[in-house]
Length: 382
Image (cartoon, rainbow, N blue to C red; front, side, top):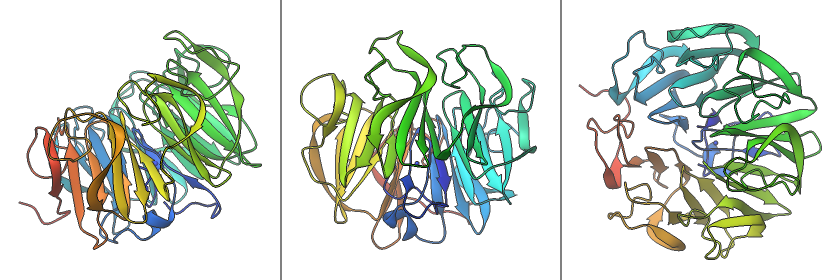
């Protein structure tokens, strides 16, 4: 569930307010800018894919596609959309969670969708079917599975589901309004039931669920019930953060490092199910990105892939999982990953999608798994 300021350039979560920092994601779900993202085509940028829906920016407005059963596309109904549609909200950044959405519009935080745990930060649990102004301002937003963060004045504020302590408040109670937890922060990210924050000095902090070691912290055990209820240091100084569902990729010292789940080969680092310490990748990538259970790397513009592929998330034309990094034979200038769909923008600016596509979030007019990259048109469909 992923944040985006104008584009997750390969990193699977935008024009960052900090030109020296690339923060992307994902499930995840939201992202900041990379060189690849900055060169993405003007017709659709900043794609952020949540559980069953995706958001992006086109012509200065939020566009959306896919699942809408809780109103998370913000268009006033609960009907799934199989083609990209204009939601009507002007925005510069979007973040798609699991059936809920955040957007930054003129510096203000707008929300819509599922709110059963207070993840919209509105002080209640009432679902919203239209984009709603929270009354809060922010410079960054991030959406996890059922929780979210906003960054206001260098302070992280969180709201929503908190059973794993992912809001960093040293308790596990639900929180219905955005509540402060960590200061001195310049970028924030969320995925699944955890959070990642980059301090002003570049140090990476993390919080929440640590089932596969995705927090990258030596002071937190790795187990199905392992959680960190307070923000803590990973010991890494980073220039880029790329969260997956239960794995995390960073760039530190000019090199990409990974940690966390590898049970489906999603890191492509050795044969272990869990990578317990920050480890280098076997290929020296120029850019990287993460999907739900996948990772993507680029050498120049050449796309490499690894991980879970049963529903076509790697776009290889088959459903064979890959546990070692494989050259896709394709080029890309940007990749956006998610749970049910991944998007690729090729070097010519054409948009493609692949993946499970359970609710039409591949944006090709139908539902059902797509094993190969299919061309996507944004706007003008019947």
